[in-house]
Image 1 (cartoon, helix red, strand yellow):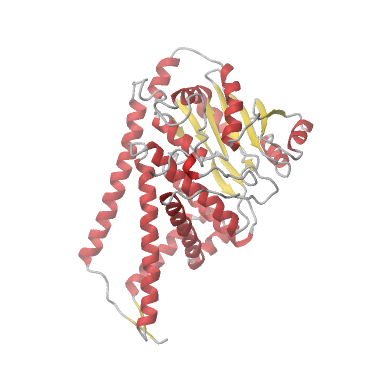
Image 2 (image 1 turned 135 degrees about the horizontal axis):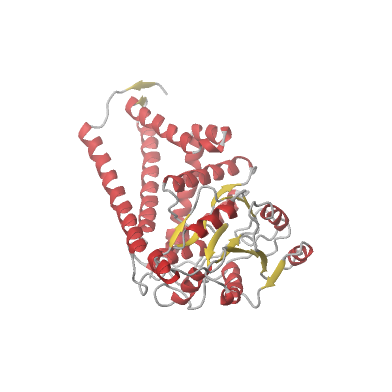
Length: 443
């Protein structure tokens, strides 16, 4: 196909108006988020914001409750293939945990025996039908009973390796900030898994960069590794069914598909101060195939939508709603771009290059490369190709649409979300509960 050039560009007024509209939209939602955070930090209303920093500091002023302790809880369902490496990295930390407990949930392999062989305490779930959240609720209900104000609990996935300094950084932050309720890790992908693995690593690298630029303000307290102050979990459990959704007494809402996202919204709704320091990093497993990635992301997407539906539109959830609106708009914009390219190809005999839009494309590529710079040369080269990452983004867009359609038509959710190793807690623990039986659907 022959080609030519056209210096035609959008009118300057249209360009300026587009920039202003985008700026105003961002400013509104960021303003709402900052206002909610500031209101929580300054709140003295123990009934509405029981985890607000001032409320906590007023209650603990002048009392020393001992040094900060860390109890690591590792939920595990048939994790014999990965548990050993997770424990090895855990005990390489510069500040060792005070206690480590493997929460064995309906294990049929050698997970329990492996933990015992390493001298690790094991607690087995009893009649648990709620996967990870249910197993953790059983363990925490007993552990929190005797927990002191400076005791903390780390929830660490059995397939996650802590980077050096995670626990030490968290303990220092809890020690010097009595109002801090929780700390989440910044997760990065494990090496390998080919092209698909690199695409996921790029995605995680950009997320970590976003959190750093937000000065640690958290989107989600990652389920891979997060630490919670014991009193925060006690208040959270006591607030379920009244201030926040869920069953009174449960730390985790077993009706939520994505328990880490839900507990983050719950803590923020109670006024909790939470953060993700740049030094608290973890390495987690990646999905090895497009099929397992589809299942994982469908769960994440549906879980996110159901969670914000359960909480409604509030100052705390406004940022989460804006994210979903932004995703919807990006789906529309990307597919409109593809449609226009297709129409130009089929409706003209000449391909027209527009230098203005080529410049926009170059700027976009530069941003993509810079945002994964810390990921190394493989990450940068993949970002520079642009087309491959656009295909990946298109895949995620389809997942988003599938999640929305399934919720809209109240379709039953059945997926295994298999992980790359045998029997992952995120994998072979099949989620077979119908969506319409879960709280938080769009009705």
